[in-house]
Length: 42
Image (cartoon, rainbow, N blue to C red; front, side, top):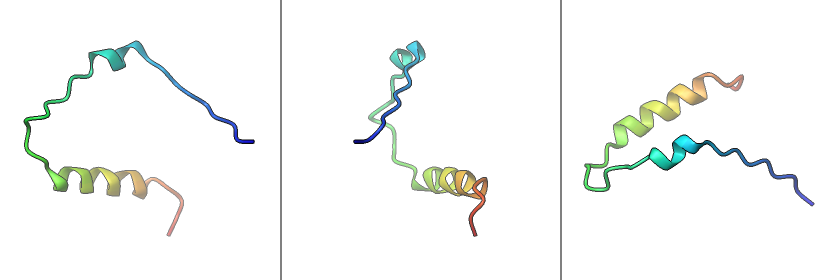
């Protein structure tokens, strides 16, 4: 059996991504590196 925790915020309903916008892989790469740098891993 697995425990699952779900979070919900009404602000999620206001999220309207622009599906016509160009995909920017550099932005994702930068954000992932930023997140990983905060972890206590080598």
